[in-house]
Amino acid sequence: MQKRFYQPDAETMPVNEIKKLQEYKLIRQVRYVYEHVEYYRNLMDEKGVKPEDITCLEDISKLPFLSKNDLREAYPYGMLATDLKNCVRIHSTSGTTGKRVVAFYTQNDVDMWEDCCARAIVAAGGDKGDVVQVAYGYGLFTGGAGLHGGSHKVGCLTLPMSSGNTNRQIQFMMDLNASILCCTPSYAAYIGETLKEQGYKPGYNSLKAGIFGAEPWTEEMRHDIENSLGIKAYDIYGLTESSGPGVAFECCEQNGMHINEDHFYAEIIDPDTGEVLPEGSKGELVFTSLDKEAFPLIRYRTRDITVLTREKCSCGRTFIRMHKPMGRSDDMMIIRGVNVFPSQIEAVLLNKGYAPNYQILIDRVNNTDTFEIRVEMLPEDFSDKPQVITKKEKKIQSAMKEMLGINPVIRLVAPKSIARSEGKAVRVIDNRKKIGIHT
Ligand code: ADP
Ligand code: ZN
Image 1: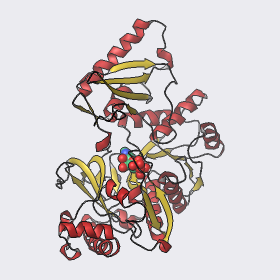
Image 2 (image 1 turned 90 degrees about the vertical axis):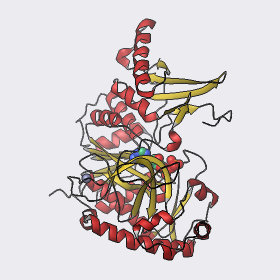
Image 3 (image 1 turned 180 degrees about the vertical axis):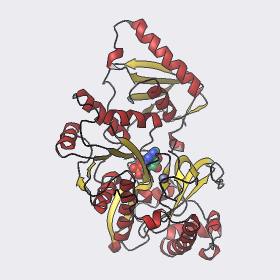
Image 4 (image 1 turned 90 degrees about the horizontal axis):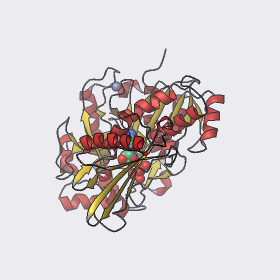
């Protein structure tokens, strides 16, 4: 019979027991961090809070937050909570939003992380006998190592492809009957596009599922990938600071990602005031690690905007779910005073039938923000009559106006003229940052 859970005792634990376990682990982890991390001890002392003040889960709100800046300030060893001799691995963030952060792992930390990834693989239908093609980057980036370790734990045959060399990816996918593909959603879309160009039709191979994450992607993008690859596409979330992918993962319902609550405690806060918001509110996701030894995090502000829900899930897992993150608070662009997320633009384009190949260009000319979206026209749209193209651009523009409230300039560009991504896609080029305008 198809395996449903990797660690059923944990994944289906009754909610009151999860909370009891979290409480016990929180008290233990706060004490551990206070004793071992001078940087965090100072933050707690400044706030006048001692480990003894934490006696239940609600007490967590007494503790100070940690931010990415704290981790950068403490670089490289300042947040290390154990002797370096006890560590077996280092990973580092992709540096999407600035200086990299390095994270350390003991063997127990690696095991816990790989268990989380194994849970995600089983939730996506993976089992012994599956061939898992890991096309996330290997190296300092956590994507490759995390899914690789998870795949081993489940007992799948692991294809450690790393990202890039798309023709070779496709050849191995076909020749070795890969059944589960793991990579960023933008790379999955690119592989799908390349397969189509090479004349393959969905269903041509043994691929049945994909586990895609490490960057924001919309439901529209999910449909696009599912159609082009002929699979079910599952979301996976994580960040280097909290170990890597696998902090949360989607089940067969594909309706929000279950957070591995036996290892992480999640809160949603108001990003401006820091106030903890009730379940169901939209806000910034904050994580506390409950088991980590080398690089524990207490109330780490992810800057990712999402919503948590405890609604019962038909898959049988009891872990709380997080919605697809709408992007990071720092992905948000303020253009002519209006807040715009790249995910809104992606949703409009894919709804209109365009492929997820676009680029957003922002600049400031004569004190006014300029806002242009370049979109690749579909090969079948190609026309040498400028008025036909203009009409299509106007259609996209009015849909954007409806979604965003402001009018971008739309430029349909030639097919294949926007660079494809093998890792995290770069969608926004904001030239205002170059001239020091705070955006
Ligand atoms: P960096 O912060 O330099 O990009 P990471 O590679 O650790 O470093 O990336 C973690 C971030 O990637 C998360 O904080 C989040 O913004 C984004 N991310 C990861 N998985 C997802 C996902 N499934 N959906 C949306 N965003 C994601
Ligand atoms: Zn579920």
